[in-house]
Length: 106
Image (cartoon, rainbow, N blue to C red; front, side, top):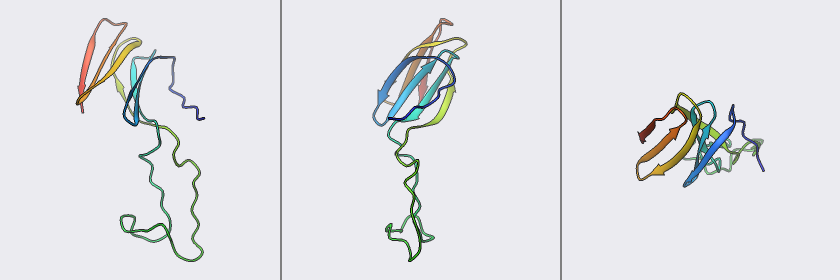
């Protein structure tokens, strides 16, 4: 289990594949890599794209933090609390206490 501070009360949460959309009381929507898949683990060698993970003799790898959820970015969705967030086919919709709805395209 992992705890991810969001800076304010969480009022709404929606899953979008490996991402979580988190609407908070501050008016932000945090886009969270819920599975930690966006993290890169470097093991030995100088070519990350071609590294087979074997490294060289004496190299060590650390799994510390690998696979933990993290906030990828935050959007200023509302002037007040975000009460609704939902993924769409190519973006998301957010609405809140300021009486507006915002559609974001990804």
